[in-house]
Image (cartoon, rainbow, N blue to C red; front, side, top):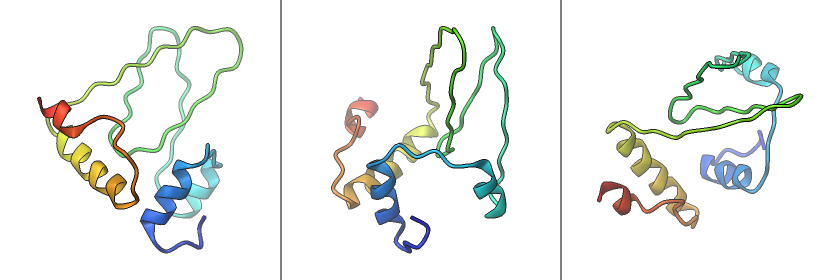
Length: 99
């Protein structure tokens, strides 16, 4: 999707797909990239607007938890505006979050 200049179209296209990219693509584009191995008892924090992916190999039991700080509400509002611009319904009502 790299030829597309409109970020909203790119966002829409990515929303229709499960996309996995090589970290080399990010590094070549000058985007900071890192990897980690999560061991038992460890937590991983992913900040808002960060691309992340993961996979499991072998037997495991995975758990995820989503938390938000008050600053997150501004980011959620911006995301709701972007989604509305391409006629995507919100995943969660922003007004319900504020309530």
